[in-house]
Image (cartoon, rainbow, N blue to C red; front, top):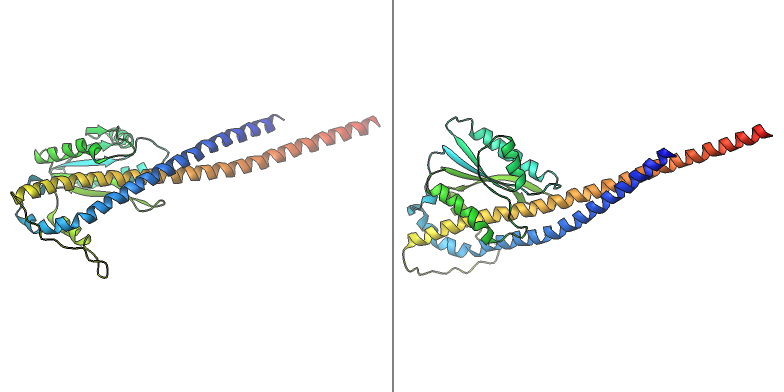
Amino acid sequence: MSNSKAIKNRIKSVKSTKKITKAMELVAASKMKRAVSSTLASRLYAEYSWEILTSIARNLEDSTHPLFIEREARNILLVLITSNRGLCGAYNAQVTKKAISILKNQEENKNTKIDILSIGKKGDTSMRRLGRNIIASFTELPDNISLSDVLPISKMIMDEYTLEHYDKVLVAYTDFISALTQRPNIKQILPISKTELKELIENLAPKKGAKEMKRVNYLFEGNREELITSLAEKLTRMQIYQMLLESNASEQSSRMVAMKNASEASGEMIDDLTLVFNKARQSNITREISEISAGMASVS
């Protein structure tokens, strides 16, 4: 009887866990919908800005802005984007593993020094455990992140590079592919590659057969170098913002899938425990009937 009671308590406990994971799955699904919507909306910004970018792309070769200047990479800043909370599957582990791999590859050169700027508590904890030097940690960003929330981060990164404290800035984040697929990635944001920027502009150009975007010949007042300076800063800020949006959408998607799997596993465990409970109860009933029958036989 005590065994049946223990199984019954276990079933009750698993049912409570299933209610929690189901609720977390629904919350994550709601957050994921908003995060994906924001991510896709910001991608459209890049598409609509193509017309202006193509108009000034010819000036990139002559630009002397500090964010375009390439130096020998002796001091590198790695920006690691993770989540503040767990229960999101392999999301944090994958991007942290990707960051550790690039750290090992870069540090094969003994003259290279890498510092960390962490966004999210999980990445901060992992890097501190490895004994890495963390120059700053941002852990208070909201779920519905806006461009204004990125300003302190982007300003610090650009200032550190402009002051030549670092020769290269890399960002480890997670690309949102779909609700079931997220891909950890590492991208260089500083120095801004003129070649990559031109490739970005070409990729945003209308494909053959698609509706051609209207081209406009702009007249610029003032210094073109100032325009390119403004573009460089806004492009860098927008890249960081986009990476945070991609990571946020990936986090919520990964959490939704993890909680869905946990709910399904809880349901299977409940079915298995119910079967064991029924077998134990049937065994007890059979034993009691046998005892009663044996008692009646001995009396007769």
